[in-house]
Image (cartoon, rainbow, N blue to C red):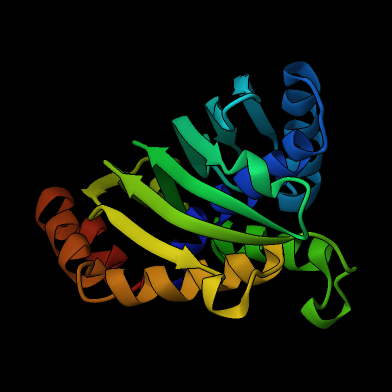
Length: 234
């Protein structure tokens, strides 16, 4: 359960990274390229964005067609896919030490959680992100961030195991609505933001999602092969 939550954090980390380039005055094409370059380096997987729309005068923007692939060794086509990620930044805060992100809305993301021979795709992504960011206490000084509102809605998740040869079973996820991330500390770093989001989402989803229930339905649908999956995703 905890590992699956990392997929949502991956989306947020990429959005924050993209927003950072936006805040430094890069144009749309450069931002799109930067998300692909640094997102791929961060996750150890292919990261692509179909398009970027920015309105720098009022702080609104959107990422279109975000796809986070899987690290080498996994059979499913991607880890995270989101058609639209909407952003709204307080323009007046851009010249200050703490940038206020009014809203991040992740619309209809698709997540695939794959159990490999030794670990999951999100285990691998988490490890790669941790190595890229380094120890949190060694983060270089820089702008801090407050996210006033984070919305993740209409999300769907799929689960797979190595012996399923890339096939998946599907479940819906409850909508997530978080407020005032980083506000209590007067702003936090992107790394701290990722951790805070992980903890907040875990509290909201733990009671709502049961892989035991999901895998029970798989057993009914796939017979003996489905029964073998039970317990893998705990």
